[in-house]
Image (cartoon, rainbow, N blue to C red; front, side, top):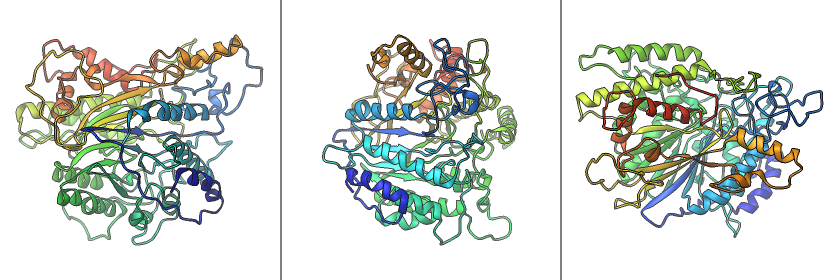
Length: 570
């Protein structure tokens, strides 16, 4: 369907939800050896957000007194023009508008083959005075589709880039809870099948209405959108998958079993049979903290069985920037003898505490970071993030040790969790570069500034192999303050023109791994990410490395460079 026609249909769709929207997928833009794709996640659009409102009100209520020029956003409890980082408030329309304008004007012209959109477009249910409803969620998701379609509409009115959406835990009502009945359509999934018809191949609409899963093919890569709500243990409407070892009474297949069976037969087996590869996308990241135990174990075994086919995994939900590796249900595995190691025991302890203390990502779980703290954002951070940070480093440390003992041991590709657009800390967007063909390649987005170590000539990556990514972010405190200053002086000059990298736009480059973490020349593979984890935790010693500097850089990027927020030392 032409994009302009879809935009015209959206209002009627909101009213009636009766007419299917069918379309052929657009062709990817890549014609060379490397391609690019955008990962955007967790918009959490809040139409009720008000600039200058009290953060304590969820950024919805203006203070009774007049907001004077001396009142500064964020630092003294008031919502800024572009959002309130660290506050728990959702995304104002100004932030979403500026995000889409940056995508359309800056990122898209550089070439994007497809878009990975990993859910949670609706606002949190954080204000009892404006409770979320099913209609509210649908309306905000309609708005999100409108934003994405407009950003990727070509001059002839067509949707120019394939968009691969995914359901978030806040995109359903009540949040987290998505029911499942074998062989039957789910009303929530029927809504998204209709709304996302321009993105879902027509031949997969029926299975999507039952399970919420689908895939598309781009450049020989099967991009699979997995409904992680049927794997997440926060979903109270479904049960855990069947035990991996077949123990226990025979049970009918659960929602997670059906999802993983679909993933194996329709995506992974297809990729193997047809000589293609797969990217997996979802909202809730696949780790032992987020998934039902049996569902996670089955998923982890699938990743091991199809290690040659799966070339990348991309998730959102947690609103922080990090990576990890697939491993057993015990988060970091066991020693060679089968007994838990010290790091395994420690990580298991972290896991048990984290399982009981992880926030409800459907509510105002991150507040308050930007409170009245003597004129500065509190240096305190939600305790679960500090705990999770140490959990991750323990995970990296164990795997690096295991690999150093047995270099031939299997370690799967890193799983990338991108930061959110909603300013839990600062907003973020990510663009990956990947190999289109099995041949030489152009090199990473930002080549290393020095080659302090050599690992031999880079091996030509395989199709779908990730080459690099560029992480972008918006320094909201800077731009909110600039907007206040501009208003105080009745200045018609756009304060965003002061952005030295992209004048007139909200976003700037945060980092690329090659530069930030000093990767070896041309390296972005499993071994390099594993080595990076070892370098951060002192397992891998290399000349010129500073372990403290590396972990501080990682921690700073984890909270998307929000000043005044620090993760406790490792």
